[in-house]
Length: 156
Image 1 (tube, one colour):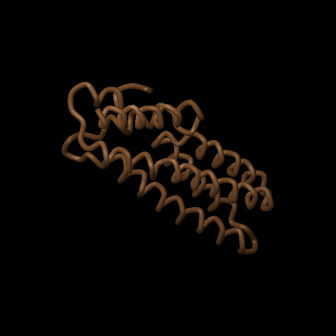
Image 2 (cartoon, rainbow, N blue to C red):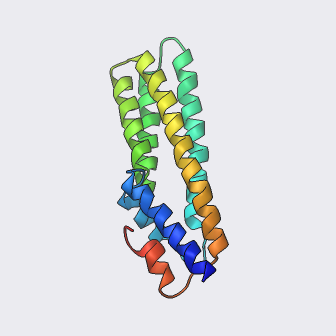
């Protein structure tokens, strides 16, 4: 009975990610790659995503301090950030990267700096949502039978 309540809490939390526009259908596809042989696959991918993204943002920040600003290099990094965020379904993050990329294409250094701060905040928001979500999944333990589709099988 307690586990059922936990599963409902997890499902509601997950649903809110989609309702808020934080995630899109690519996250569902990522979840579908997770299986009994690798029950922490999604969490591991997201951990790598956050780590790699923070490194890339630090590189962008460093490039902004150089004169002349390497807009080509910044655009390449932002393209990779866009691809990475889209591949895991991080819709709001991807949208912030696109806004930042537009500033970079316009050679708007101040706009890039503002976008960079907004993007960092969006990363922290996403990370803050996932930490309790994965903690609840660990508490629930491996799911079998009908519980699995309600968590991973569809959009909600």
